[in-house]
Length: 113
Picture 1 (cartoon, rainbow, N blue to C red):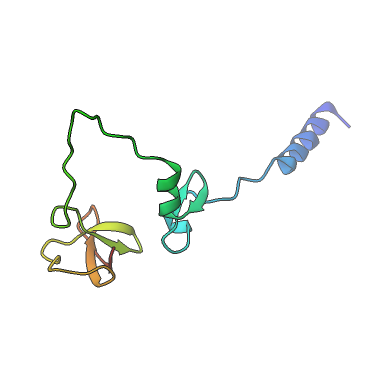
Picture 2: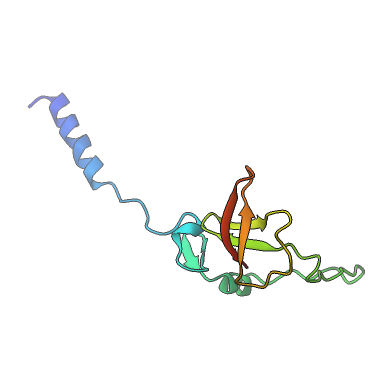
């Protein structure tokens, strides 16, 4: 065999022996239910908040707490959590049907979350 043939066979062998891509999630839609993708693992949103303690606000500054009226309402859809379509937030409770708006303005059905 020639040197060229040996190099070709060796490169094919190395290509087959290369490690497979790591399994895990890359985005939230790959996780089941309400779980989210965090660093390649599907975790519940509560577990991520507990793992990362919230920084304490400075003592000299008082931050107002958001009320239910000022908090942004979201619509859980197959495309993720989207802002509610204008004019659809008429006292909707969590779990009720809603229309979320994508960044392109397309309405997507879902439920209030």
